[in-house]
Image 1: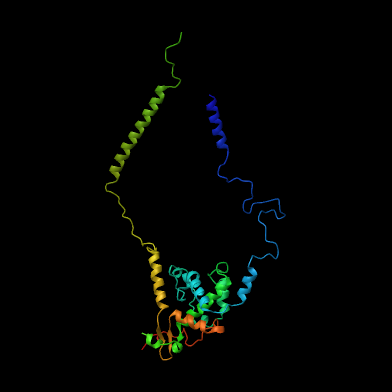
Image 2: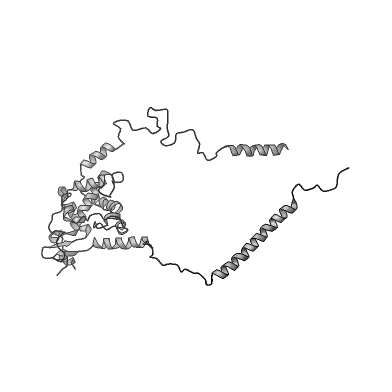
Length: 173
Length: 130
């Protein structure tokens, strides 16, 4: 009889507690709180606070790095990763996302974008444009400039004066 | 001395039994009625063939589709093609173009010279070599 009672007691005790660790002595996200004057658990950043590295990023955004082979390779890699899904690998605005119905971005090879200043491309990557959202959080300023340099290479490749290309006429079809 | 006689049931067994039997009889009569009714009313089998409709526009092989598209675009970036032969304007491989932009030095970010309009009417030269 005593064992039965102990077993029943253990069963009752086990059923009383929520074992999922859902209920703990902490605040849930955006939960009300009497601890702070605004009555919320979520607190805004104090005035003047910036994220670590923000100043360096702002400085890099204003100063385009020199265009080297290394920067160009970085630009090509980043363009293929971040831009080509919509813009296409050749910059014609015909990436796979567009093939599946997303609005097509303009081609880089239009007259308007061939004469556009580099800052235009940098600003679009930073702030977005039309249905394109900002890539500021994904691509650091140095790499944004690298992408801009690679866009210039894409534009150069489409309508190039081949006078300066060695043995170009031999390679023509 | 214990009483060996069974206890008298507290429920009216006969009433419960009649109710159950009555229910079963009702079900049986209903089934027979429905069978007769349908056999009289429905002379032929009603069969509506399924209506064919357009297949959804889904990708059956997205990996192959992407590989095909990227192969086409990479091919476009790797060829020499005449745009305007008389003026010496052509499409050049991207590696060559990258070198040319690097060679521009301080002017690397500058806009590309409009040596020919991309908005020229189709057929003016058509990009075809002659």
